[in-house]
Length: 299
Image (cartoon, rainbow, N blue to C red; front, side, top):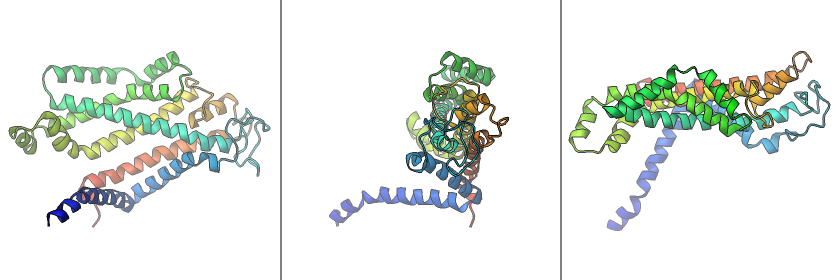
């Protein structure tokens, strides 16, 4: 009897995790908007991962005739520098998705950590953190991004990710702080405090599980803003033009004035991909709302 109990006990957490993952995927897939967002996002991720296999040419090859229209050899035509537009579009998904997920995750974690501490703690710690968030919120985001990017011009994708994180975490931190301040006075948090639980355990086990929808919304909003900010900074020439991303494609399209040359795909294709990625994040947010609120789930 004891042998059976000991042998079967490690499988229980694994089974629970599998059931939880199944519930997440099933809920997202059952929600039409979230299903559409998930399909779009997976398609873009697959394009980035399989870029060496599905791209017809290397994105850096510049030996083709410049500014040609769509043809059998170049489905989306060529750029002003003689590169294949489709190949650059496929490889550009890598850096653009890296910015979206990298900046989104880092900014969300920073906002979550500071917001949780500021909302749960009182006194000088809350005052200092709240002042820091308010300070970053009143500073105009775009001029500050331009100043930092200009100082670090040519730093590449990592610099752009760090710039976006510095600018974008404060709003999420402010929202998390407000939510924590409303939760810390509820009965289950008070009961945990009277039972002698440590601050870290109360935050992680009692408060954080009630903020799943909010944290997901902050991530999706930050990731959407990150890919748009990256495109904007690259379009202004504040990134590294040698890299290949949807933002640098827009920069070079503007530099060579592709619309005047009749090469519409050079600017329309990366713009469409940026819009699809932003739409995927927005659609997935609907599914997360349903997942975190059982009342919204379909029978």
